[in-house]
Image (cartoon, rainbow, N blue to C red):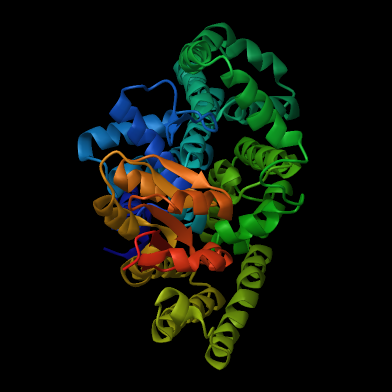
Length: 536
């Protein structure tokens, strides 16, 4: 079958798209042990829901955990009930939600721009670096991204299709409610701001009368409110903490936990949306200029969606790279519209723009490989176990794809060019999963040490940590943890007449050198170690 008919056969393209997602999101999903801090912490919270039967008040390390609403925790808890307490179950909801975002993007692009634009738009989202990573991680942001994408998709579907308007809007209100259960008020605020600005721009505020707002509000509250009411009745301190500190405080307070400058999300977006971020400036410029040969309403809607989320989180005091994940579908639709024009209605300016967007990166890439050969990172192998020969191979692999892609774009072989970039991402990621990820496990997780310590300690005894608890210990041992904050507390604990243990990070262990004579290291993995007061 000719390549052209393959490219235009929609059912085959959907199968290819799902296959790419299955490879990138589900392949070896449970191989990497749960990482400390976020992954293991959220997995522990979900595990506690199953073990103690309380699905209302999230708990971590024996205490109420108010930082995140429970949607992802509920999904992970259901997965634990079916698959057991393991890494694959903890991450399975993320992989399914990531796949869901891709399929929603396909559906929305199809409604906005037609079937030929749907595949490239969804492909861009499926193969963006950050979307791949967060579709394989135990984090709440992927649930918010899915709910926001669902709400935006349903609104636009109802806006353009009068026949399905009522059901689309009503289900959209349920999606907004789920977004609030996923990440709090911001889950509803962001889509509502984008939709409101879109209607203002279109001078169609009277369209609000067709949006089923009365029934929609009831549906929204029926989905969003019950959990907030129940947790507030059980825990009167919840609303003050979550609303004032976690939401308003994180947005406005200068004492937020993750303060970053206003331009923080520019490099985050360029890196997280790679390799398609190379073409995002061009896609934005063309969309703003309304030169793309696609439906104008769709472009305006996507631009506002993208802009609202980017500006909102840029204005917030607290910033993390994962926060802007809900704008990635919008960015993918913009780049997908660019690819549609390039494949179906290219003009000289567009061809030149794509060339200028890609060739500087392609020209720099081989020099980066040469630099790596001349100035290898000497401590990489010692710190991670990753051999430099493997680094050289992967770098050369990427460089080869980049050079091939550059030749294809110069020769105006645009379908092959997009395919080559996709293949570069997919093959590199699979190679990393096979050869790099197993080496990183001991660096990001304490699973090995946790299992050893669990065998050393009596049942039910709490784990002691010096300076900071390690969430992976709690997940893999079913124990709680206590933190010793200073050398005096450490000495008092280690003076016990029975054999006791404490978990250290290497730097903290070196800081208590004066006490080394009263303790011995019984196990060490990477930069974490178990210390005992039992001297041999």
